[in-house]
Length: 521
Ligand code: NAP
Image (cartoon, rainbow, N blue to C red; front, side, top):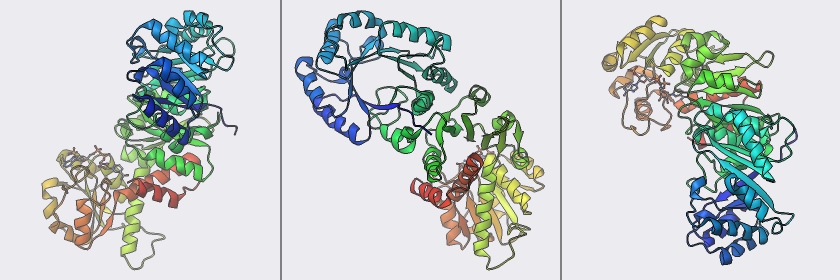
C-alpha cells in the first residue's frame, strides 16, 4: 500500500546555541525530516547574531518558533522584539515560521516582501484545557486558513482518549465543507492524546512531533523520535493500515507495542499496535467503531468490563468472566471476546510437566489430568488458571487472602477453598502443581513469597504469573527443592502469541516474539 507523506519533526528545546547545534545533528541521525527550533527556550538569546549561526548549520529544514507565555511557551519579553525575530528568520531563509493565530493577520500583512517563495507560514492555535467539538474545530481551521496561512496547526488537549477522534476527523479533512487545500497539523496533547501523534500518517496529518529523548519534549504526551520511527515505524503506515493496541489504565509500561509491531513486520502484516489509555471501555469502543480499529488487547482494569462490551464471547472467556482480547470480525464488524491468558498459562504449565515426565501419550490427554492443582489468588489470573486446570481434568484447590473469594471461585470450578494462612500446611498428597496468581513477589517486593520453601517439597511444578522479576523468590526456592519451574514470562509470551494469531489469522513468529520478550523483560 502507498505510504503517506507525513513528516516527522523533532522539536528542540535546548537552552544554548551550542546544544541546539549538537541536537540538530542528532535529530538528523535519528531520522527526523524537520527540526523545530524553539527559540523561547534559549537562555540569553541574541537574535541578531545567533539566529544566523543556527540557521547556517541546520542539517534539515527548520521551523522557527518563538512561543510566548500567553500561548503556552517560555518567551516573556516584548512582543515587538518577538515578531521582529520571526521576520528576521524569514529574511534569513528559514524554511517555516510558526506564528500564533492571535497575531497572525497582522504578522502576515507585515511580511509580504520579506518572505521568500520557499518559506512557509504555519499559523497555530493551542488549547491547553480541552478538545472542542468537530464543528468548533472546523470553525477554528477556517479562521486560521483565512489569515493566509500556508499550513494550519491546531493542538488541543485530550482529557479523554475519545477526544482524539475529533483530531483524526480534522487530519482527514472531514471538518471542512469542501476539500482542504492547506495542509493541516492536528494533534491532541496529554498522555490520553498519544494516538493522535502516532497515527497521524494514517489519517493524513502534515507532520507529527517526536522529541530527541525522554525529558526533552516540547509538549505534553509527545513520544520520542526513536519510538515513532523504530517501535511504531510510522513511515510505513498507509491509509489502509489496521490499528490494534492495548487498552488499559495505566498502560505506558506495556511491552505489547515492542512485541506486536515487530511481529507484524516480521510476517509482512499491515498493522500497527499502540497503547490506548482508556478510562471508560464502553465509550472507547463506541467512538472507535470503524473497521480501522481491528483488535485490542485488554488489561487491568478493563478485563471484566470487556466481557459486557463484546457482541460475542468465547465460552471459556465467558466462564472465566474476563476477556483479554477483542477482535472486530471482518464480515460484520462485531466484537468477539477471547481469553488468551488461560491458554498461555495452561499450555506453559503442560509443557513444563511434559518435560518433567519421561514419557506419555499426551496427544489425547493433558498431563494435568487427575493432578491436584493449587491456585494461589482468585483475581483475573487466578480465575483463568483455575478454569484452565479444570478444563484439562485437574482437581483444583484455591488459596486466597480473601477467603470468601477463594470459596466463590472454588465452588465455580468444583474445587476446594483454602485460607491463605493454611497454604503452608496443605499437603494432602505429593506431586501437586502450584500456580501463584497474586502479585506477591512482584517488583519491588522481590523478597516476598506466597508459600514457605519447606512446603514447596510437595510440589512437582511451580508456576508464577509474576514476571517482573523473571525469576521470583518463589521460583528460585521451588527450583532449589527440585520442582520444575515455569515463569510468568512464558505465560506473557504465549498469551501475546495467541492474540497475534487472533489479530492476523496467521501463525505467530514464535522465535522472534520470545527473543523480544526475553530481551525486554
Ligand atoms: P487481580 O485480579 O487484581 O487479582 C489479584 C490477586 O492477588 C487477588 O487474588 C488478591 O487477593 C491477591 N493479592 C494481591 N496482593 C496480595 C497480597 N499482598 N497478599 C496476598 N494476596 C494478594 O490481578 P490479576 O490480573 O489476577 O494479576 C495478578 C498477578 O498476575 C499480577 O502480578 C499480574 O502481573 C500477573 N499476571 C501475569 C500475566 C502474565 O502474562 N504473566 C497475565 C495476567 C496477570 P484478594 O482477593 O485477597 O485481594
